[in-house]
Image 1 (cartoon, helix red, strand yellow):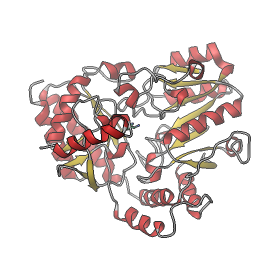
Image 2 (cartoon, helix red, strand yellow; image 1 turned 120 degrees about the vertical axis):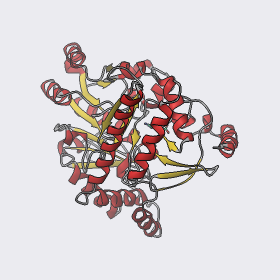
Image 3 (tube, helix red, strand yellow; image 1 turned 45 degrees about the vertical axis):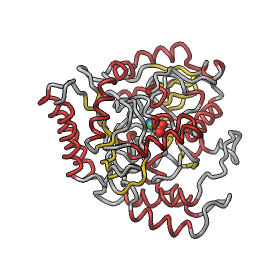
Image 4 (tube, rainbow, N blue to C red; image 1 turned 90 degrees about the vertical axis):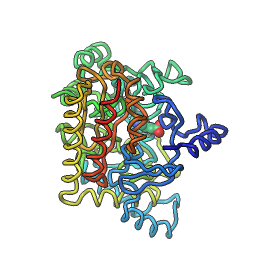
Length: 428
Ligand code: HOZ
């Protein structure tokens, strides 16, 4: 494979775009080498600017559960754009998408659309502080909730990928009210509530962590958070930006049977265009302007194109049996990866939730940020490049999730497994 065009474009991009990218993980810092520049995508496949074709498991980090350029999404966007792109006024598509979200997440009696997962989270944080009049927020190390100041503490995803603990430019006063504790650690939550109980506005969690690789919650962990927040008058915010619509027409909260006070969504609900959303019971959401005192606004919030892409996507996901074939393919991928680990003797932990999955090169199970960081991310870099050169594109970091779409074929899965086994059989 040659990467000349990507290299040339990266050099040019590096003169005008910070780090040559518009989002850090794409810079390939974690795996080394020059990042790919992508020319196009269709179904499960992407083609880079050098004409190299890959089976794509980045899937834009989650939105593309239908795969690239789904014909119906493209068709509906073409007819929608003919009517205009944005009006600064409400359109009926915003109602339509809100209704679809409510069908999947019934506790979201009221919804507010914004333009990214980050915006949904920072709005939800302001809301829970406005509702409770309290300041402290509990988050979990390795969870990444977008780049809002208050939560850039032991964040996952790019923060973890770049080996940072937080971010410069975030005043101490902003994070002094953020308590970051280990994922899956009940004792730490209990301690935090013993120490700060009545000061805690909310606990926020990725119900399945997807930004330190994939790390599911241990049995009863989410229910424990639900109980302790209720007991202490704190709110429970579930960040389903990544997990929303990954396991089925709903989210992790349905799989784990827990109801939060506020849910944050993004990625899939925009069908590949920028959308975020937050919502919950009416009594909470009516605190948001223009009804209540918590301010939040957005020029492009609810824009017709993004709403349409979301509507088309969710309507397709709502079809009976839509997820059956997808989840069977991920079953095969998960089973195949575990079998390869056994066959090759290469220690590999396969963590999976619904249609998101990842591997950690670790002898022991990975159940939190510390375990993830202790995995062999150096070997992951070699693994990443080996698979890329075999035509399989993974996220360029050991601390990201791989995303399987409905467009991935059985053949894609088998080719991926062959590439994995081929790479693992090479010298360590
Ligand atoms: N939050 C995204 C990954 N979980 C960011 C990806 C990027 O930096 O491109």
